[in-house]
Length: 292
Figure (cartoon, rainbow, N blue to C red):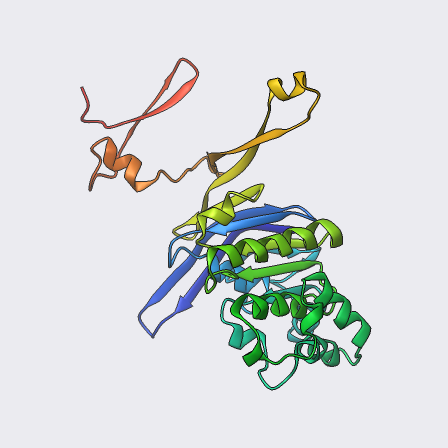
């Protein structure tokens, strides 16, 4: 579904200053996948999301979404891409909803941009996100969690194949966040839509099969779910799984990895920029060169 190779994004701040938001990022996402993206502020995750959504263009590299080359799209093709291929859910509900429209009218609005309006489809989407009882409610009558669920329905109005969500649970409590994630999981399972969620919420990331960590404009690691079959449950004739996650460092095409700063500090590498690399008993060791 998504193929990013050596993706670079440079912003020009002024005549003398440039900021490199993405520094050769690589990422592949399969069709129908539900995955998370995490990273500190300034890591590049929001820049990546904006480019996947067609809101910004890469400076260099390769960016394919559903077979479409976003680097070479004309402005007209990009408008069609945003209307037909991708849906966006923002953290700030003011960007998702128009306050003087009802919930069902908000969902109908993206359809109007394509020259069609289907009230039945809008109602069906609101029912899918558990908002069928609030069809004619306006923004002021809805809670934060309800507004976000309406926003998810809006993002699906034109049947996109990719759904992007930027901190969709950032302004709600833990219980509501769980409800919103369950909505995403149900949509992913029932509609087959590919969903990428940018989040700081570690509780949410534990419920996803795959989470990509971005550090300094590059994909630094992936957190993958590992399922362990409980033998004692097998003996009782019950098939149950216990889920845990393992974090794997990403090795780029040049063989480079990003070592977490706290790992380097732990071996006394504060301020230093050279390591000794050793191959020992089939393992690669990173060693402080000052170590005896």
